[in-house]
Length: 445
Image (tube, helix red, strand yellow):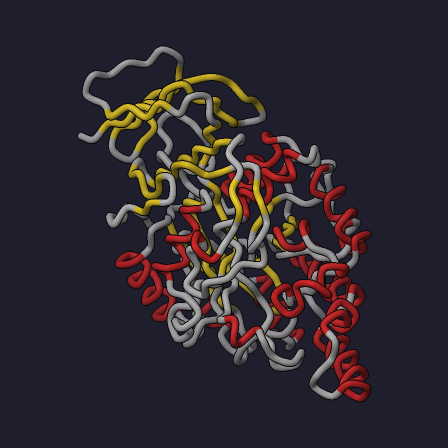
């Protein structure tokens, strides 16, 4: 039996911060309390650093299979644990796409062999795989993903009859990418008339506009209300959309939820001049006013989760004219440090960071025994030193693609240790060669 004892920690959990020790046996938190002693345990004295539950990121693109020149489950989950992310949910738009039960299980087999963080996958809905979706066991994976805006291959679901049938026949959480395709195509055509393919990146939020987002998300919400489906809207990017969501009931009682991603909380359209296509995302980074309203909705609980939408591309792919530069960027290593920076700036409390990045994803997806610091739960833990500044540079970026939109930025807080199921996966810049990740299980009845 392997035992570890974390001493002199400040735990952030379930709305409070308190001094405590944590005793871990194998993969489970056995005891939380002060003055714990165990002569058989390896001791980690964290000297007053903060300990929080491992981050659960419900939206990543780790590029395997088929796009492994950009990243792999191994490389990107390794970068994730460096950022305190101990659990990820990967998206279905790989090559081949995860739109059959066979391909879903193939992905699980890949992750079992290579993941450094706990894993699950979303099953992709299309215009023509409804019967396959009906066969999906509600406890087999984290949920269903629908692209209601641009995606790769045939993953755009634009047949309204099929869409309603998916909503009516899915017990699991349906997560959606909401952008109205017709609006975007019309906007793009207008700017191509003026600029050809070399559209200035500053027009990205006008092409992938607030109107395009609102039309799609409001339509999805109306359909969820009509059918009773459980809907989660990914990566909100506009202030306009925030009023579509409720904050007058607890998360466990919500049928319709939403999240915001790190880049939409950090960047605005004023950053395009410096960052260019490095911050080209779908949905687009929009105005500072949109960002302000996203923060307001996050803090008043209209928005429930903070995620990354980690989606790496090579620099040579990003260094292209507007129409050829892919959307997306790497974020898992720097998401928690970025949010801790917002804590230092007085924008969000540590307790709310843990709520939105740990507790709420566990609640929303019915994840078993993760997302909290509780006795009997899996020992997914992050140790953060809030008084240790560091600068993001090429030398310390762990992504396979080798770059970050935060490069050159100085963060005030450092992730010093990450434990995955009780195993020390990361310590002060060093990665364990051993993996101890597990497939997620769910408490769905």
